[in-house]
Length: 222
Image 1 (cartoon, rainbow, N blue to C red):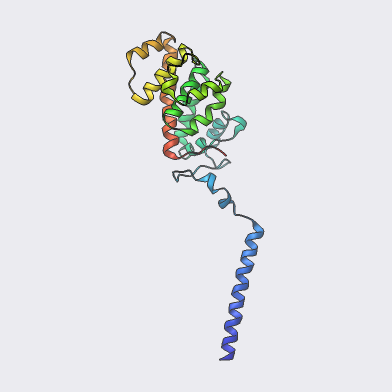
Image 2 (cartoon, helix red, strand yellow; image 1 turned 180 degrees about the horizontal axis):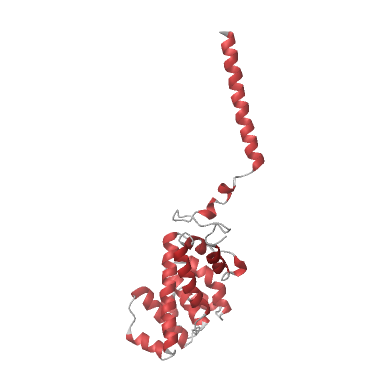
């Protein structure tokens, strides 16, 4: 009986020792990578972000997306889109054109985008476009006013007629879908038809962006 008790004690001590060695080993290795960056890999919706490395997606597609990003770094939006390479490819082509190939004034484009971010409560869209809005000539006072788009529409002190008409069009397309004839006539009195189409397309496109980032839970980059 004494021998049995001794064997049990020895096995118990051995088990404890093995557990201690395992814990020490983990401490030496540090936090596993999948734990350390889990916050970046999973969006608020539970959908995974693709990694910002060679495994992000098809090389030619990822390179095309990187070419549009400062420093070639993928945004969380890109990493979400790359879950579907076909969708990401179409998206990159469309928004590459909106951002870099239109005759529409960058200021009016960014004014519309910032307004959509506010109306649709898409913080990600707002944060991403603050630098672009400022680079296009937007002021801090205008950004503050845009936090209430319905009021900014009539703000003659901070916004000129083309900007107020853009805000009116953006508000109606985003909130009402349909646009009043008077609003469209107002925009067409200022812009040629090509730029009217581009503005309408930009507003429609960035409404899609805001709905996409809200539904998929894309978070602002840290």
